Image (cartoon, rainbow, N blue to C red; front, side, top):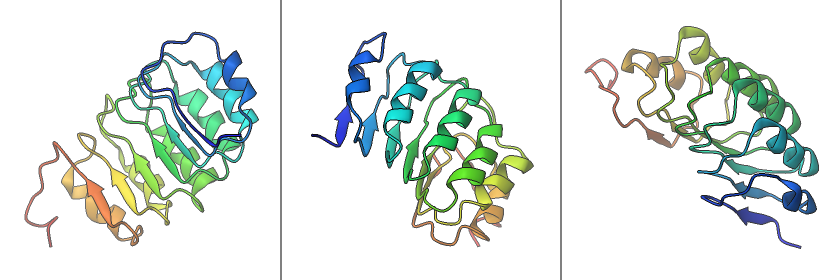
Length: 168
């Protein structure tokens, strides 16, 4: 039985074949048209999923991802780059349910910028070592994150203007 599955850019409408997978540790569904209900079925069958890539999945909603966060208590890596329907309220759920395990979080190029509450939620993810906030954050908020997330070793900030105070 395999524990990794990469279906990026695959075109499938119904998740029934994926319901046969019940021991996945890593799942890449980037660039697919998966929807909340199908994703939830997959997650329910794979509660030990550690690595999930949903980048460019434009049909995933904030409400659906909050339900996913509640299910995935072992998640270590979550990639949600370019997910147009996600909002900052998801970050609070990530902090509530996944702060102990999450070490990689990628949120590049959402359709909005992060607000103060969103920054506070990221600060609660104390085990983060890799963070991608490209196009999503103002440089003045970076120090607020670093003051709590001291384990970050890789930070990706494309399209973020850094000022002199931030670099100190």
